[in-house]
Image (cartoon, rainbow, N blue to C red):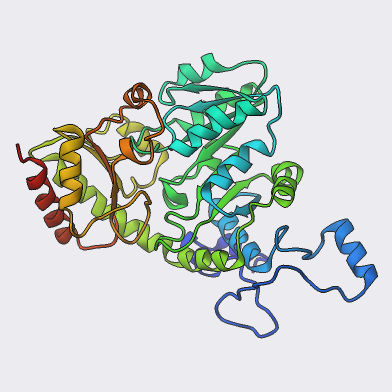
Length: 398
């Protein structure tokens, strides 16, 4: 028998049992430690605790419930260490700013969520960190963008909302040859469908708000990487700037992780059927789904992903007017800018998640006024198809 049975567990088992620490009451479900601070047995113990941080001091630094969530995610991702944050954007921002400094340079894939573009394009330069956006699909563009002071590559794959992919292994090789770290936002693939660390990435970030919670309840995020990265950079940044995850939200995320494999598997199956259904409908100009043979990067998707996700992006003839008619005719699918929920959600990126981008920037990314991003939930495929058909009929009105 091994001294570490968790190492032999499958992902499904780890997501139910991994990282669990029980109190003296031996509770079945993980305990919620809703506490701000902790009591010391003596002044000497308090002094030692602050010196070594070997133990809990303040929940902005660490908390038992949050620690269980971090450990469970660490086991799932195969990372050396992990730290949770209050939101997904706190995870993205912290993952970069914790180690970048004035005079550094970051290269990012241009196909990013609107807030991620803000961090790279607007926030980093305010602190003297230069940035360059490239077409992430073009390996040569990453090489060309390198500078002597480049310290980080950052990208989403699949990207929001166009589902553009970045070849993680190829880009990581370019970055590592120049001593730069690779930060991957893996939220669309989820930890069930893609393993960036195994492909060469150094740091992985998630908005736990999405699939990890999976039921539209709480905000959260997490950053995973090496022990050295967390110890030397991330821990102190989070400790002193304060984007800490609440213990209650951590507990909700723990409950979400228990069903993550089942939910993602079912959502992927339905999403593939929905994508195929949409592809044959009048008024639909194109369908983007990583698992379809006509997906532009189908070969790469098969190589670095074990499944193709639950997001389907499609474009309607008739632009914004047709898209709004489609959205307003839906009865089952809900209009919302979130994704990864048990409920099917849809949004119009040009006027929501990417509205802050200039029209030419959206055009460069391929985000048209007719584009819609559908996050497929756990409803019956037949019910979803009927709702989509009803909305398509409304959108095709001349």
